Image (cartoon, rainbow, N blue to C red; front, side, top):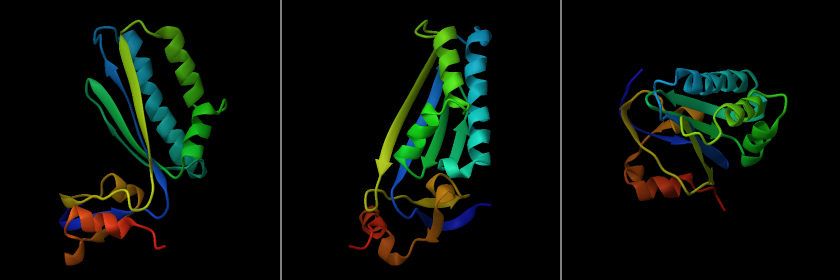
Length: 159
């Protein structure tokens, strides 16, 4: 549902933004990139079924470069999932290293950002709930929070 108004999102406490993806460098080598691409939906399904692991929300975009935007409750929970021998991630990572390693056929990447109150702001206009608005809660942008600076101040935790 598109919200035809100015909205901003809040998420109480600290959180983590994790961007992860892959790039198909050799599109004709389906046998190389398809197993990598298929691993992420399995991980996301597992994480959605186990909310105690800390994933708050994820969005996935598919093109030559695949991107997954994830919001996590904490860095500790993200790292614990990455190292969990019983979870989907570690076997997928090992399979990637065995099958592809550094042969150049498939690129993978990630970026991790720890976010604390007062260090983020956002705005959504004519949008369905998206990104942080799905991980946290959406609120109408009051006149006092029309600027990015005002929205930054509004996300700061009380002292």
